[in-house]
Length: 176
Image (cartoon, rainbow, N blue to C red):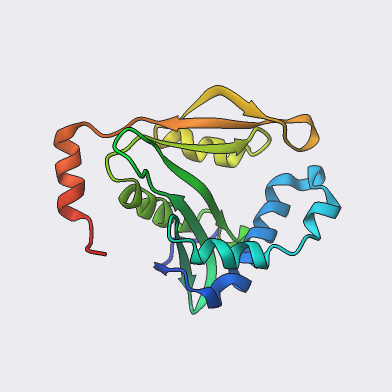
């Protein structure tokens, strides 16, 4: 575990696709461990990340330390008042676990989601992620889909913000 350090966050750019792919691949290898499908691990995900970064319906940001991308987040904001935001991905290089990167990225998620409720999927074998989200008020649902090593991806929900808190969030949300 690293000591807490200063990181900068910024909106991802197309040139970040290679670094994001590296963080994604390294992070997946860490949490899947022996359950990682080797064929799937070898898939080239850089074209996927290039598309996601350019997708106007998503927000992708990176965390950097000394000019190196050490984590990233992708969020699909709610498009209608009755819909939920989706936290699609949050990954950190394992060498930066415990250094505050995930929390800094999660703080961006809170801005991106606004006052809406939110959902995400967590592989049931990823105890670190489940603990992270549970500490932040997320709850697992009974919705799931098949996952690696016979362990499902479980949908988790986060409730929306009540009106007084919504006003506070909107007041401190940076201009886009």
